[in-house]
Amino acid sequence: MEINVLAFGQVADITGKTSWKVPLVKTTNELNQQLIKSYPQLQSTTYLIAVNKKIIQESVELNTDDTVALLPPFSGG
Image (tube, rainbow, N blue to C red):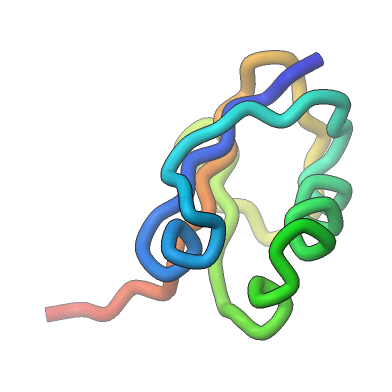
C-alpha cells in the first residue's frame, strides 16, 4: 500500500518537498505521527489534512493511491 502526500506553504517549507509517496500507512493519524517523527517542526505547526480533496476532522482509513494534502491555515481576503 502506498499513498500520495502533497504539502503546501509552510508545511512544504518544513518538509523540503511538495509531493512524495508514503508506504504502509493505514490511517491519517498514523501518517501524522510518522510525519512528526520525520519532521519534528510539524508538531508546532498548524495545518489541515485533506484526503482525496476533502478536508477531514478525524482520523480516516487510507487506501492505496489515496492523496493526502497537508494544508497550511488559510486567510481570507
